[in-house]
Length: 74
Image 1 (cartoon, rainbow, N blue to C red):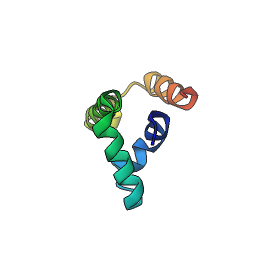
Image 2: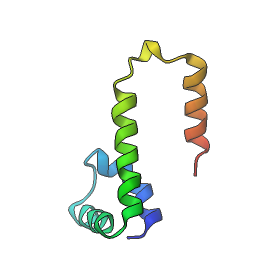
Image 3: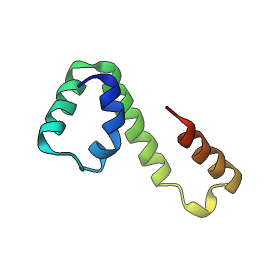
Image 4: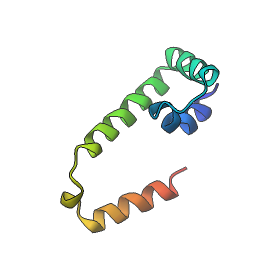
């Protein structure tokens, strides 16, 4: 597995929606690639932080900008 593959599979990994062989390859790459390990930590922290944000406290304009940014991100 290379770094691009790992980035594309982060959501499946975090949602525990990966076949066992892919999970092993994912975790092996994490153990060998400090950059990807850092990336995963950042994504986990983002999910944790945003998951704690009550929906009614998020400004609708900011929500729209965030969603647009994620749609365009690649």
